[in-house]
Length: 87
Image (cartoon, rainbow, N blue to C red; front, top):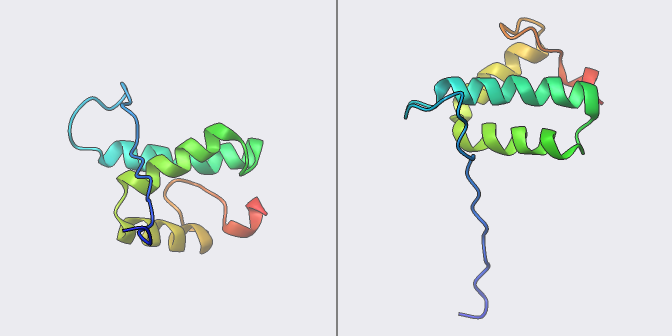
C-alpha cells in the first residue's frame, strides 16, 4: 500500500457558455483559446494553463492529433499557427 502513487485528477470547471452536456464546442473553444493565450502571454501564464488542462480533459485524443497535424501543416480551420511559432 505504501508504494502506491497518488494521482490528482482534475476536470474542466463549469463554463456557462456551454451549459449542455455535449462538450464538443467547449473542447474546441478551449483548444483555440489556449493557442491564442500562449501567443499573447506565453505557456506559463496561469490562464493559458487552465485552457490547456480543460481541452486535454474534454477533447478526445484523436481530435487533438488531427487538429495538431492540421495546425502544423498550416491548414487549420481555426487559423492557428504551427508549433514553431509558439517557441
